[in-house]
Image: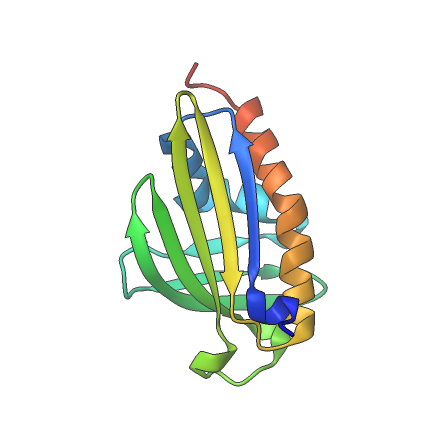
Length: 152
């Protein structure tokens, strides 16, 4: 019998905004920091979103943390995929310990369906954390985008 860890996580949300706006929130460092964590985290995102290049997300949450990974796919307005390893996990820096995140955008008139999936959980606690985090974070992202409608 497969566990949740083996199956992965998949979340979907419909956002009342065009896909290029949603894409900006997924890829621009300042916008990412606004929805990925609160101000006290001092979240910093460093990447150029070029396939094969590094992704670094660091800040403070009950202590300093650093998530590092690599951009795996980037199709502007459609698909973003990267892997990451959190320093909080204290796991060795080996491929098997990296979780893969995939963001797919599907435009529908003036709305965008955002699908977020996560695969490969080196521990049960990482699975539980990501499942909980993305359940709430997608709603925060939706609210921020829809309340900041400067494009209408």
